[in-house]
Image (cartoon, rainbow, N blue to C red; front, side, top):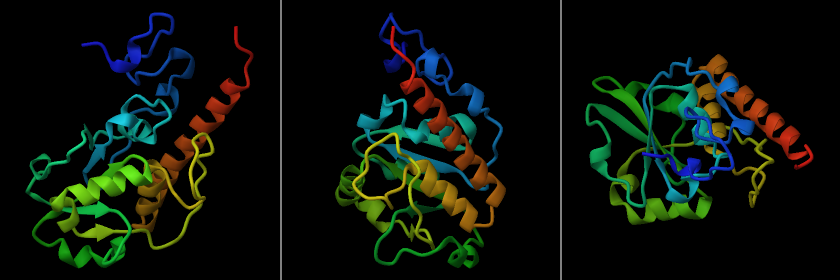
Length: 199
């Protein structure tokens, strides 16, 4: 079945990353990174076809990421053999360094909600099982580097940034920095192409 991003016959698309060939991400995102735990991303459908969505970079880089495009996340989408944590700020959210002693009988899995801040809050509000997942938040405050997409506040992070900083706080420093570097390379490449004259 044709990928949604490949509908226009005027713009050839990469078969791997599904973005226009002129903006192909494959060179900066080889699938060679191994994560310390699996990730399930519940992605709002509005994000699916946006080639600047950072979940695309994550999925290209790491095999252990499952992206589920949905309006209604389901508990059945999560493997019950893992202890799942939701990466989302709020009351009761803890730091990743605080949960290590809990992971005795089960391995850790991470749930990420991908969409605008308004849409991810709606995910949470409308899905009881998400509300019941134990939450993780970042220990430190970070400023986004994602200048290609508009954001209401400087400390609203993209999905890749939030996950990368979580890895760094979990002492997976090399892995987290590599993901951030790939994002920086993508930003630089896209800015360069935006500046190129159109035909």
